[in-house]
Amino acid sequence: MLSDEFKEFCSVITPDENELERWEKRVKRITKKLNKIYYDSENDEDNSFIVGSVGRSTSLNKLSDYDVIFDLPKEVYDKYDSYETNGQSALLQKIKSHIKEIHPKTKIRGDGQVVVIEFSDGAIELVPGFQQVNNSFKYPDSNEGGKWKITNPLPEISTCIQYDLDTKQNFSNFSRILRSWKNTVGFKFKGLLIDTMVFDFFEENPDDQANSFNEYFNILKNLFKYLKEQDSDRSYWYALGSKQQITNDDEGTFIRKAKKAYNTLDNYDSNKDDINELLRNLLGKDFPKQESLESTAIFEYVDYTDNEEFIENKFAVNIQYNLNIDCTVEQNGWRPTRLREMIKKRQILKKNKKLTFYVSFDDFPEYINRNVQYFWKVKNEGHEAKKRDMTRGEITKGLNHWEESTDFKGDHYVECYAIVDNLVIAKSRINVPIKT
Image (tube, rainbow, N blue to C red; front, side, top):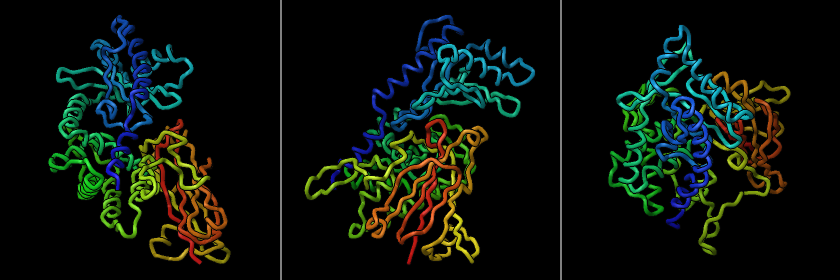
């Protein structure tokens, strides 16, 4: 096994200089506009703080969002704090109107806690903030009548940068690997919580070093073990650097997913399993596909079939919400049955059944529900599908439901993707095992 496989993967999923420069130019233009208005300055850097995963240097490539805090003068806070009702919303709308002057044709919305400037390849999420004496920021929240909140990203950023040096990039590499896992499997896992979990893991395992394939593999397995042993009833975790509370909003979905990932790696049998295929299924198609080591000893990026499409090649992916799909199984003369229930009871799905796949759960806010589009992928696997040239794998736009039928045996699967503004925000898969 080549030791460069994980190293290549980490390089591929790291944003390159050209990508970061493209976003920085956009931020500088907005910064210059706001500095002119609020500070009578032409400076395009002062008062802007790049935060989020980009600021912490743990973001994936193909950036879907770029988080910025713009520090406003105290008199601006005093003005909007004196409003009788929701000065926070008024502030967001004012910042939105200023940015609209330099981006008149760009979709811009100011709601919740941010002003979102949407470009064709992602969005800048700008928070108008007020830096405090302890370097934290007070910022507006227009929900529920309006209030002010506090965030403290600067010590998180400095901690990440220093810790990445201390761990010789193990910290940022595994933070990105977990993000790729999250996007591939399809579930919500907050970026700051990812970085905090990786930080805490390496604090408990300071001697772990990733230089060879086996070392990467073992650290990844142990990291999943660390995640699966977290308490799903825990209300919050303390963020690295700032010690802000990161709330557990979804009953620790990441803990259940990590348990499954750990079991996959722990049960790996070198005599039976293709480790390269296993890792690509777990971490995503950016993990180098292994061609014949005996003949070439190189890795190339290739698709499995001529027809199969991959969602990450069509849209940016940043899973931010949870989505589940299920399937109703029907046949004349039989009571409709849920596919997940059949699988749970180990019941056999036979041919000549009508299948209706549908979204059974999501935790989308109202804005997402108004704008979401659904895409579906049906992948037929097994000898019979290949023999009949019916492996499929194309990605097709649809509604929140999709109809199929059981035509031939094999372990097939169906995936659903929820997309807003050319960004995959949620995904779900269901296996469809058809027997004779």
